[in-house]
Image (tube, rainbow, N blue to C red; front, side):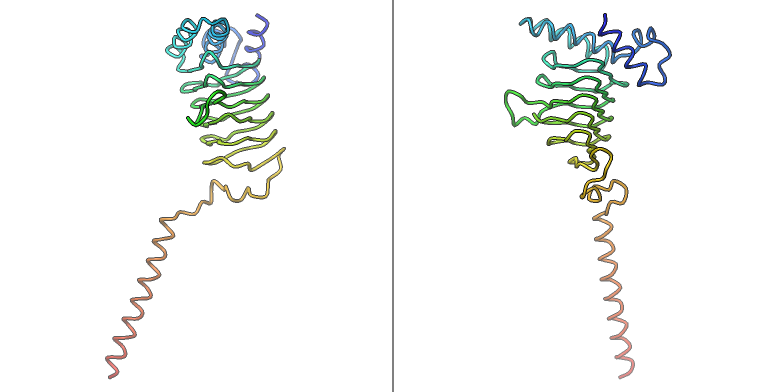
Length: 217
């Protein structure tokens, strides 16, 4: 009950729409998925793996959140909205972690044994992000929406893009932050069209000069 109370308080602190702990307990699918996972993980650790998967699949059916019973999840875990979240078997999640909908903590298919990421404490992973592989995301890190993270993220870093790059550490820009500008992105198609336009203008100018020379003769 102590852990449930912590979880409800964490939801209340992070979600301005939450009006009461009773509402959170009854109506928030992230809370339900976490409770089901605690049960499934207990069964998994006691070698009742069929029952563990049954509980996890039941949870998936009701919440839209798929957490493998083998995953290890810390305290005050918050799932905001939650639909479409997938957490793999060997994933490890620290305390005070916040996940938004559409997040995947998965593998690449190239590893055996430890296949899924380890998420540190106080990490935020925004909607649609994919963290794939057996590496660590450091404490206090931030993963931007729709980022695809394929390598380790340092503590207090911010990762954005596909594949993700580190753009900030402890609030300070890193040297290559400009390389992952998500707003002023060069369009390769536009560049080719501009090059073609320049060549057409050059050819038209050459033809005009040739016509002018013929008229003079």
